[in-house]
Length: 82
Image (cartoon, rainbow, N blue to C red; front, side):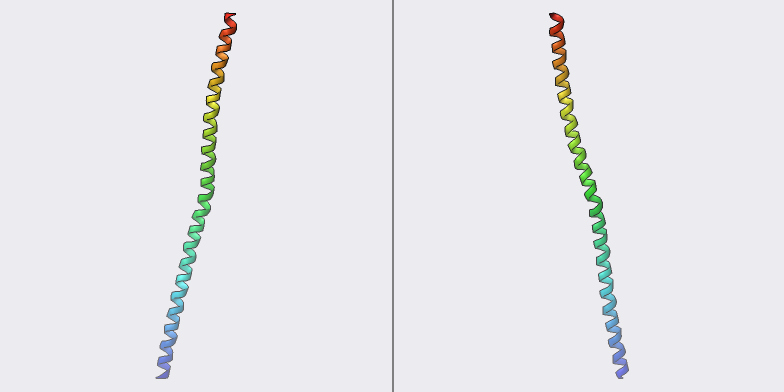
């Protein structure tokens, strides 16, 4: 009878260890997936920020170009009327 109780205790302990190991492995898998996602999202966000910054810079340069062309045309007209 004592062997039966000892066997049950071992089975119970084995089940607890198995459950614990499964939980630990599950947590590591979830953490790895989160870290991979963060690792991918970080460079993606950086690229998006750079693109937005460059788009703003391009818009400012286009506006400056238009202003300079208008000034040039005005000066050309003034010279041709002289």
